[in-house]
Image (cartoon, rainbow, N blue to C red; front, side):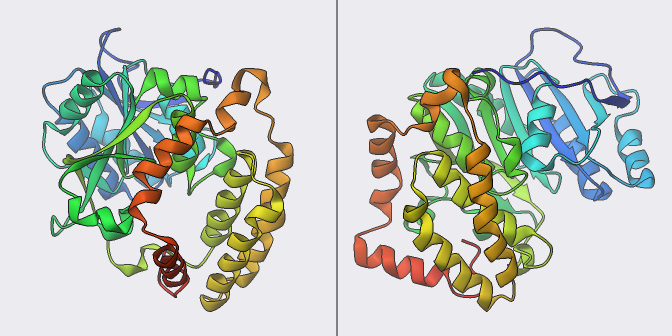
Length: 344
């Protein structure tokens, strides 16, 4: 598979493009308001040393005054470019379009409320991918910006591995706040699924990486500092719960699960949604997931990426399921995840 070709977005400020054709990494930052945090993220990216890189900021609908602040942050810069996308494509679609702007061998996605932990973070991620050709992605350690402690709401791995947060281990997914992907593998996997908009997009593309025979490596020594903290991050208002439920069910369906097989997960989500006052969102998510799955057509070139191979299943068993304990422990974890305030 290859990435789609996207229309060129409107150039707002900064360089027209990278200063040199052969460089190591693109840093992509999606923006929509939150100008103060985004300007700090841009400064952090531009301060990365020991690596050739270009910083791309893709705005998805900031108010004029905030867009002007972003433009001022890169005005005259040779190493950064601010563009404005034609609409808000969400996290998945926005990252696809931002990634397509560059040609660096590595794409590092940095949340607009995060910063690199040191000025060598990007270089270390690039070196890590270069050292192991079968790695498709590096999952960074996500720290709370104000304390330097692990951001527990950004821990996307079995809880039993949390004591190893400063170490390294193979993983089955990565966290969006800060991660590095090998561009060639991202293109071969077809990029993110635009239909997801936001939530679960990293898990979805990770499954395709695993089906390609690639690995994902969590690196506790390569970190970003995340400014969003506290139990309020998982907002129950708006449509967040709808996307959370719909996307997880849709992913299961498009990788071959029968509707009956995802029913228990759907019902469990309804219990949690009811307890948090968003039952209607969860109920709408089921039919929406089925509709997305019916429309999904990977095409002959990519069909094999959506059938989990024996090797991929074995990888998941060793690097995820094995850390979740036996049946009793896993059932307990499922029950605890349904309690109010648990994000997943």
